[in-house]
Image 1 (cartoon, helix red, strand yellow):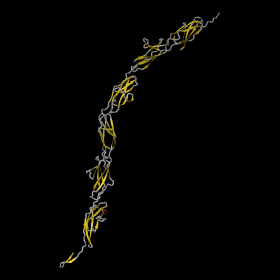
Image 2 (image 1 turned 60 degrees about the vertical axis):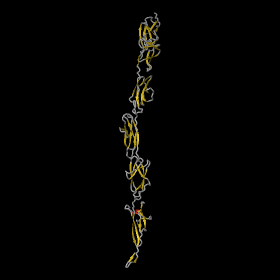
Image 3 (image 1 turned 90 degrees about the horizontal axis):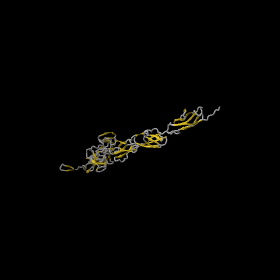
Image 4 (image 1 turned 30 degrees about the vertical axis):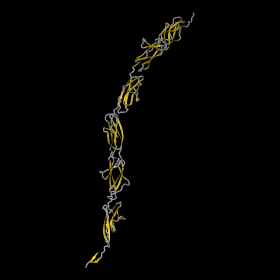
Length: 532
């Protein structure tokens, strides 16, 4: 008995392709041919899938395996003797999956449309695209991407490669119409309360366009105006006039309607006159404000109550000081007036040093004094002793006033300044002396010698004899008012001197001469003696 050892099984294992046409295809096949060895017949075939996932198919009598996708395979052959054969790995690959992506490349502007970029990866070779899944109309081809200009609408595309492998449908992009750029203006504060002020405000708000608005203020002719713009579109510190706002939004432009900023026809003016206090301490200062212009009724307030307004434009009875007056119209336009009320210094009087010369003797009318005036308002007027008497008005710069030909006794000086302010001053003025001397002569005889006595009497107003002394005929003064045995003669006189310097003379008087009495006798007629 010969036991023959069969030859090892051998075979040719051939895939229909090693590269599938499209990602995900399952149309590849593996065919086993030229099987030899082993039993020589009675072969069965098993397909082993190694990757991506391990699996087996068979055994089967047919040497052909179909409906295969990408993967790594081996084929096992077994005969009736259980002899076996396993082929080398058979690798079937597939192209990468065709993927498409649609993005917005550029956004539309007022001058240009939107562009979309369609790109694809995977698959094989050039790509073609269509807006319909059946590719009834091919819109174009591209190697990796293409740019498509579109108008507003909704877009998505279908893509396939040269092998007809289709990508997933692209994402969908909706292009909305670009909103029209519109500029709205708020003219709520487009007016000026006070003529000439720059308090006008225009607020512009843009909508539509491309955003990123740039606001520019223009005059009615479209000329750019430099203006304060604290926030975009808010223009402040504007004078009266016509304005418009131009807005740039990318390549979109729009201009607002014309807005007129108005102001009152006449500016608020507030000329005023003040009157200072006439007499010190009288608090009769005043101010009159003759405001005009502005809007509506004008009211007035004066410090310190600047929140209390009156319709009257005159404020009186003001004390010295600095004040503020506000003149304000119905729109709150106001002017502040600052002014000062002054008062003259108090009228003051002083006696000029060395000027007081009293009347020494009553009736001489030679008393005098001068006064120096200050304060008040020049020129000054003065009167003496009679408030309703005749006043003497000095020159504008005159401050010294003399009073002459005065009799003795206290005086009252009345002073009146240019504004009628009055004052009076009591002047202590020495009383004059009334001597009124009178000389009386009395004759006598002593030891047959003639004698005389001259006695001087004075006015009863002189109560202290010690204030007087006496001089006969210009001789030496004596304290006694009696002169004895004045020589006979005519026109004698006695000066009486007061301690204040007053000297008064008596009326002249004569002193008779009386000889000593002598008697002689002689015989006269019969029985007669004659005594002489």
